[in-house]
Each structure stands twice: as C-alpha cells, then as structure tokens.
Image (cartoon, rainbow, N blue to C red):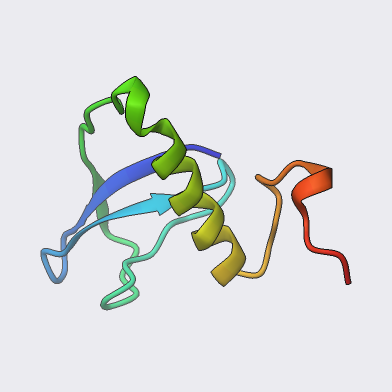
Length: 76
C-alpha cells in the first residue's frame, strides 16, 4: 500500500495517507472525500526506515497489520 499526499478541497488541510487501491480516502479533519492528490517527493534512502515505521504505526492504529511481515505481527 503506497503512502499518498492529499489536500482536502473542503477544509484545505494537507495530509498523508496509507491507501489501499480500492479504498476511497477521506480527510482526517472533516471526513470529506473531495481530495486532490499532491505530488510528493521520494524519500531519501536514509529515511526509509522512518517511513516504514510511520506506516506501520498508522496501520496499527487502524487495526490492521497487512504491511507487517508474518513474524512481526502481534500474536493474539
């Protein structure tokens, strides 16, 4: 799942989202789906670990662990 940058057309908030291809993203501030995808700069190689960590934290908050390796998933 890629991380995209968006700008909400309703409240003018800019944010990043980890989005599945079939999912319609919504603004975290106002829940509007009227979003404009922004051009984002690629991550420098040294910052990849931080981006992966951020994406995993967001996935955990959303209750799914699809971007974790099976060995890294929490055991229930």
